[in-house]
Amino acid sequence: MIQFAPDHDEIERRVEALLFAAAGPLSAAEIARRLPEGADVGGAISGLRERYQGRGVELECVADRWRFRTAADLSFMMTEEREEPRRLSKAALETLAIIAYHQPCTRAEIESVRGVSLSKGTLDLLLEMGFVKLKGRRRTPGRPVTYGTADKFLEHFSLASLYDLPGIQEMKAAGLLDLSIPVGFEVPDPTRTSDEDDAPLLEGMEDSPEFAQDFVSDD
Image 1 (cartoon, helix red, strand yellow):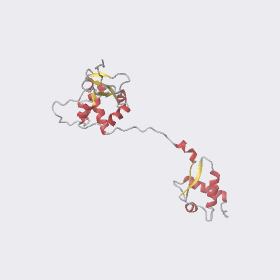
Image 2 (image 1 turned 120 degrees about the vertical axis):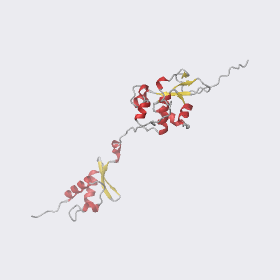
Image 3 (image 1 turned 180 degrees about the horizontal axis):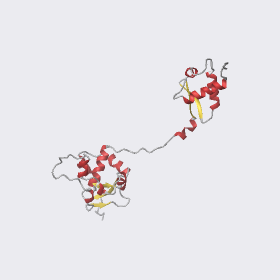
Image 4 (image 1 turned 60 degrees about the vertical axis):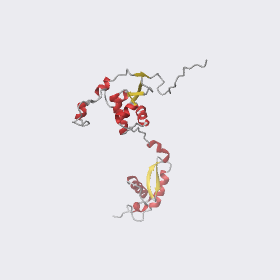
């Protein structure tokens, strides 16, 4: 039985199949090894480049290897924008837990519980993410701002209310507390906190600076 050598169109068709199915770019030598001896690989590649010119998929050469790729002007269609959830640092989680159980509390009170100073960025991040909100100002010298949890905190942790925060028994069961805790140790109950010592923030004045008032007249 006489076998005829494939013509140019058939060679071009086979090269197209090889490039399409390849996991990576192929050199002319790699393509030639899969074709009949003497096949015009260069002519087939030139024909494919001309045929795919200006189409959604084009044939390009990368480091002397050939591959199909999406046309550069259509790359915007392959871009997918996703919102990556922001992860809280250990310091932010500790700060959020302290605010949740001790609210309303001031920055100084948070630092007292943690035992280390608190960077401004930590509270700013919690405020920006909506987990924490400004509650008021403590009626003490300096009138420090107090912080409390916002509704988004309950939503994020799937809590119906602050009553659903884990208590001492739940923390023990989860291994978060040592079983031999000191006598008299209590987990703060945020539902029993009182705002009586706090003055409410004026609407729209949360970030406004305070100024000392001079009552001395210039008579």
